[in-house]
Amino acid sequence: MKLKVNEIFKSIQGESTYAGLPCSFIRLTGCNLRCSYCDTTYAYEKGEDMGLEEILTDMELLGCNLVEITGGEPLLQEGTGGLIKKLLDEGYKVLVETNGSLNIDVLPEGTIRIVDIKCPGSGMSERMDWKNIERLRDTDEVKFVLSSQEDYTWARGIIDKYALLDKSKVLMGVAYGKLDPRPLAEWILQDGLEVRLQLQLHRYIWPPGTQEGTLLRSTCRHDTLSTRD
Ligand code: SF4
Image (cartoon, rainbow, N blue to C red):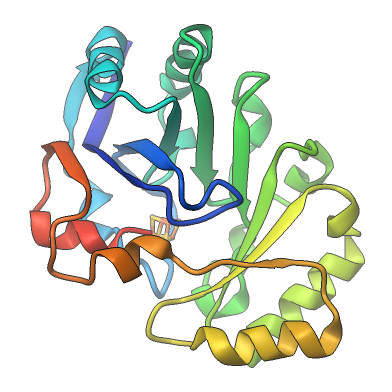
């Protein structure tokens, strides 16, 4: 089974409760959504076909225990579950970033699933698979990316409606260039909302236009690497 891989690199994990840790990234090609703020449009189509052993060898070379599979949308590819299983068997801790539109239960037990809930500002909130909320485990994380105060109000409503804080860790971040983190921080504090505000650390370490971390392979232009999501 081969996977279509857009890029493989090592960096500092910029998001989630794992932020700050060294992490190897496997970015898979293809996405079924088209978010208004997407900064990984370069991963929609370009990629090289790689076998599982080849990817495992790359992970060994990069040498991080933490591996994130991202995209694009990783759940679109049939081989993703098999790759995760191999990585877990080899002792890696595996995070998967998924856009929330597909059934997360196709991923093997032991995967840490970071599930987006797309806000109206993304233009994709109608595409969510809301059953994913019932599928969450306490190791999973749910992520809202906000473009405006309207998105914040909407996200707060979803957190209440589904009692999300009882089900998993909840992350809130801003769509880069659309909303500043400061007003978001102030809304969270005013409301006493027990969510984790996340900044995309990699953007502060490697500003747009600079080479982020260690690039092992890429089928896209390097100047896009520092703007990954
Ligand atoms: S932001 Fe993520 S989910 Fe949205 S279009 Fe881009 S790659 Fe797909």
